[in-house]
Length: 262
Ligand code: GLN
Image 1 (cartoon, rainbow, N blue to C red):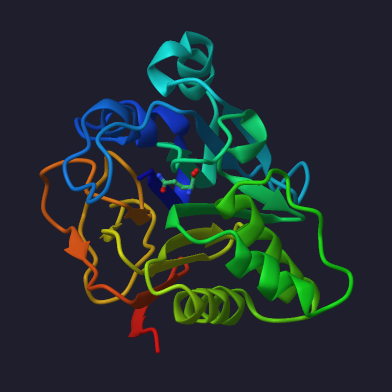
Image 2 (cartoon, rainbow, N blue to C red):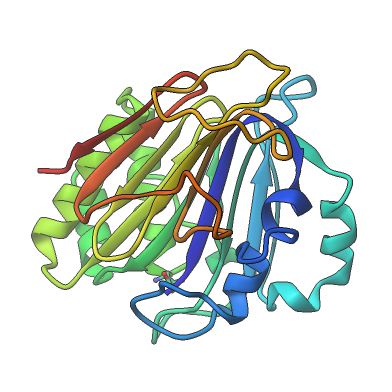
């Protein structure tokens, strides 16, 4: 299945998050270490990031080719810097289209979403059907349909973490074989779930920023202060914390809160 990662904190380049770490998303595309389903992630990749001084909606770049083939993205990634980034590499589920519109991150308004897993298509379609004003999914891919369900809950006024938790629990209840690791951000918080796949996070604190994040703060000046949430650790350094299955993580620049999904 796919691998995804998000950063929230002091601005850093996309390359410092995705390309430079020894086991960052670029490496995870061809040699993931913890992926429980599938072997490589060569069916596409995408990244979204925020430039709040310009607009509230994120910028997004995605392509239906392996991330290692896109030298132009690597070049851009070296100079694009953001305080909030969400990116994914894709291993398409059997039967799902391989196309740019089926590639995470999906976006709606100021939100970005990635799904690591699979779910029967009838499940998100059923969850969408109940209410009016359903958003049109980007693609007939399970993840795009799940994203549309989350967008619908948000449009109805749900808080981000509540919407994500509600959709995962509802979908998991309807499809016992579903895997539902979602990673979502609105630019100021990261919400993630574990439901059948791996997830880790690490909090780091830059010496000069004075920003503290929870009790687990580590000093890591090379990446600044913030929290990284990822399908698997991007290096063998200290500070990574693994989540259990069926958990919900909510992180902002002050706190990381992990609770059980029920
Ligand atoms: N089911 C999604 C897709 O086909 C996600 C796949 C994954 O997690 N590898 O893109």
